[in-house]
Image 1 (cartoon, one colour):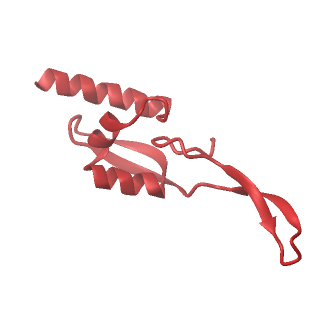
Image 2 (image 1 turned 180 degrees about the vertical axis):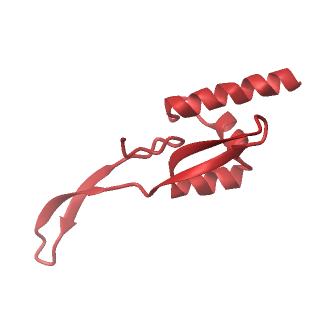
Length: 96
């Protein structure tokens, strides 16, 4: 399983550990990923995603999974999240 957020696309970054003597060693900065279950109000189902803590705060700020996915760019979403987004759009079109 890749270390990439399924909703924002945030992934591993690289940099240096810098010692007091200014020695530099390569290191990896890993995203803070969590396995969470998010509820879709339109579909009435829950979905499991592996997302970053920052993405979880953004989902809450935007008003839930449905609002987040509708506003999100398709290029940042995983295949699983894209399928959910298409289901949500289809359900909203049928309800309207």
